[in-house]
Image 1: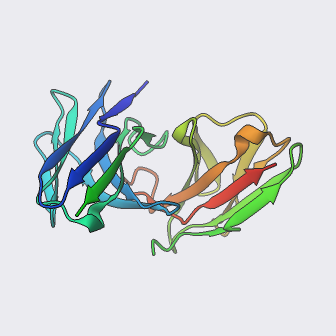
Image 2 (image 1 turned 90 degrees about the horizontal axis):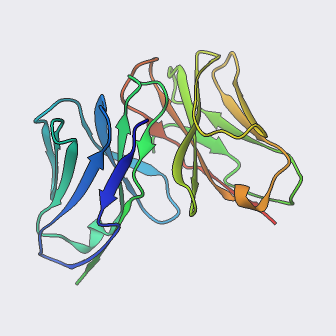
Length: 112
Length: 113
């Protein structure tokens, strides 16, 4: 059974700083996903990482995947207040079936 | 806007009651997933349907059931409701059976009093 752990679960940081959210998973995951959720809102897909060594970047966010270490990271560069949200990573061990297994989420607050 | 619609947006009901949540997937998407998000359990996969047939089950209680209709919309039925069923219920859709992209709807917030 796939288990996904994120850390930290809560992060308060200042604008302009860099930080990384870590996502470890327990067994083979076909794909690794990152989602963003604003309070009371739906999940917005940020990245889907399909293979070992995959790196994707969008604006100030960059995600990477190391399947050997069973680790994905979400790096935030020069944080801005608008990036305040909860970030989830999720794994997919069923080739599209069995749904996604989510981590508990990282609640990120970026202060001016 | 993902193109996935869910109704109602909010639902308040009493313990012991039964409710139905509705989801319309993106146009052309054949696969529908249901997820529950609660403070206690986090985000959990409940069930998946593909082109009208159940494909996978997650942590779905026996009191809950779902179906997907010929027009591909899906309904999640929750019965004998308990306080702990209060949560945000999301539907997601994807184009085909093994597609890796899931597009999430806005969710239905269920409050059981």
